[in-house]
Length: 163
Image (cartoon, rainbow, N blue to C red; front, side, top):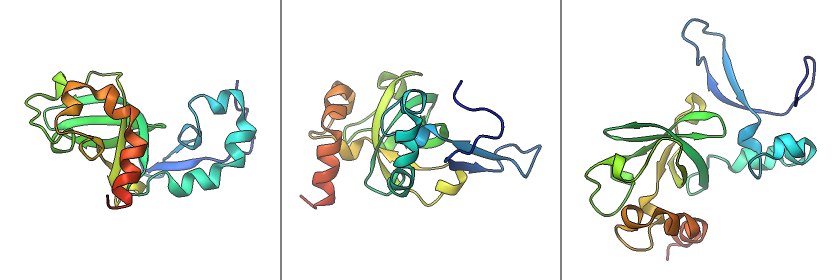
């Protein structure tokens, strides 16, 4: 058990009013503050020590995030990033190559690395993502997503520097 009633915790608001039946509801996440998956279970003190730092950069444009595909639709995939389920990877942002069918690239439960391209709706738990921006070569996401994920941080850094 990680928490008990009355515990003080550091967390991040990932959605305001997520429950239409209760307009005062708020969705909180400690998972989104984890430097590495599972840290909250194994070392909560580490998560709390870095919470402000992680929260301040979590949704910045150009930041590479890792999440899990939770829903596939004709226009893209929704990715759960630390409990925030509203992150959209639109079909036009999957690859520089033509993506005829999202299901050929992703399946529910797939781990994905993507870069934040728009965070204007982060308070409503909506962040727009791109894997296209991380492709070293046009079509890599279609042919070999693992290779794109392996180089994700380096490609994002390269884009930030304008190279």
